[in-house]
Image 1 (cartoon, helix red, strand yellow):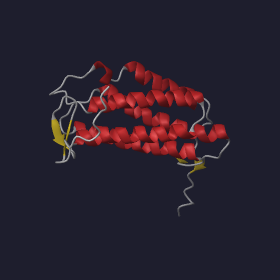
Image 2 (cartoon, rainbow, N blue to C red):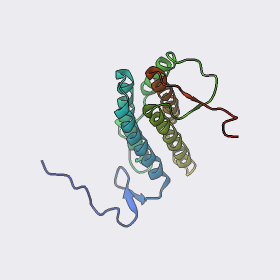
Image 3 (cartoon, rainbow, N blue to C red):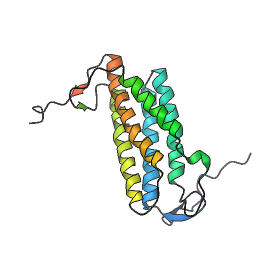
Image 4 (spheres, rainbow, N blue to C red):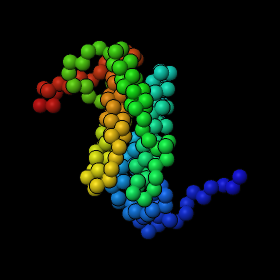
Length: 189
């Protein structure tokens, strides 16, 4: 098997190829969107290094694979290249995220105040993932403002994912017996 070429020089002039070979500037909103998905996936990998709950790890592994799907989807300009079926977000993927949210949230105490990131390393990292996920979602919406079509399941998946990461952050505090950091309006005065 021939070793792959890591560097090609194709991007040395400020452009990169989308799926299908069509080149766009590296500043294109499509690249910002799928680059932020890649960043989120990396942060989730870091979160997984601190999580020891098998069910949460299984869910996060699924999320990593699905985020790669979302990245592939966003790296495809459908006006120039057909989507591959594996680049689509299915209703079943959204349902799996919603079921995980329901399962985890069902184990948590009622939320009566705003929670700040922290409590322990895994919880803090889950909140980093949540905020990067929200940024990725904003990037995708910015892409749609350029006229690009993004299928509704992709948007729903990203919205649900940030909710999942929030409950994972809470759960990592609760199940380890660490205190969640509750926002105190007088603390910042």
